[in-house]
Length: 63
Image (cartoon, rainbow, N blue to C red; front, side, top):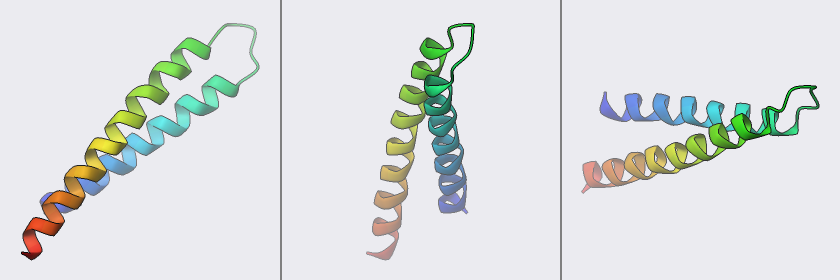
């Protein structure tokens, strides 16, 4: 069950990363680039962290 939770959290973090990149590329009258950059950084770090936890826990469960 823990692996499912971590997998779901990794997918949510990847969605936040995607949203941040889309905001960075958006052509709007108000500046949303800083918000997009912040979301992209947070989403990227969280995605890497959750995938690393997923892999380490999954491999340790097999051993």
